[in-house]
Image 1 (cartoon, rainbow, N blue to C red):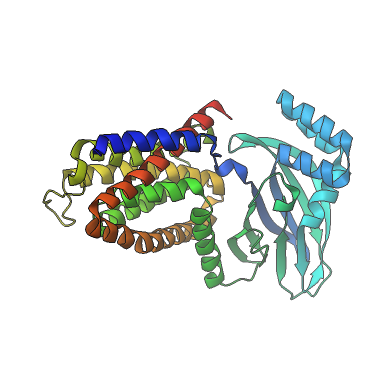
Image 2: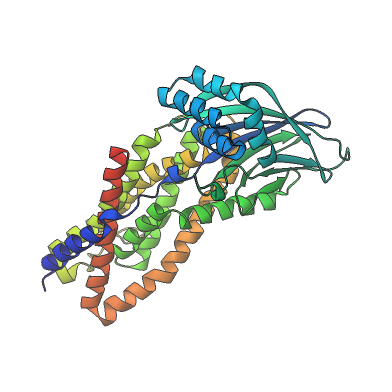
Length: 399
């Protein structure tokens, strides 16, 4: 069978099979933003940012408040911030009854009492309306005890979103820092060491890559489209460097692109990188893995450098997706910057681990059974390309 027939058969078959594939994106999870300060001794204040529509349905369901659901949903459908504010203010008791037990503060091992202060504010964040609520926590524990904050907001068990992250920044009693809380690590002591903060964000970066099908598929496209280990390692590292640059630009406030643009481009990047290999397979057939001697430190040929450039550009876009998911667009982002660079280290570690696991096996197949190697590479590339195109169309059309 010729390479062209191989590619056509793969694309048609897997296009039919994968037409119903779900499009997993950042939007299936939620990010809660929390900023903790201490106005006075024994008094902690947290300013929370929560997705408005998610807060409405979660609080209404938890408190069995049908009026909150009806008023809040109507305001959301109208897109009226004043009506959204009024809906939450009118059901402040139900909202606090939901939020209070799920964002808790302890001091010296004793629970602090939470009360809402000030009015709810509505503002756009990450392209969706967020409700900003301020809670005062009065603590009667030991004066010298450490504060511990726990977040169990919007858990998977509610069935509305999954993998909610709470991005916490704090400046309390002369200690400042940041933390990322989720179901696996729901609480943090504000006296945590730098090593603990490093590990938290390293773990978060690793989990973000492993839990994101779009990023896994992008990496698979890089692996099967590479001709040697050096190429795939350089491509993965270039990808990481690119979205590290985006983090810095976002922290400086120089770049902000809405998710409605970023998410479709991420899906398109998956399709393009995978299709690049299919196009080369179409043109070169069994010589697709041949390398023209390159010059320079990395010994890359023209095709290798071109691919590296494309991956870097797409890495910048993926970085915007990471930044949007973690809220890197506010003044306090400088507090988070070091932790987020560690987040990137976690991503890179997982990428290299997957490369070390998968690329040698693919290389072995290519050397011992070249025809089977073409089939494996072609099948994987076709699957990735079709899924990427499907996700692109789905995200553009808003399904």
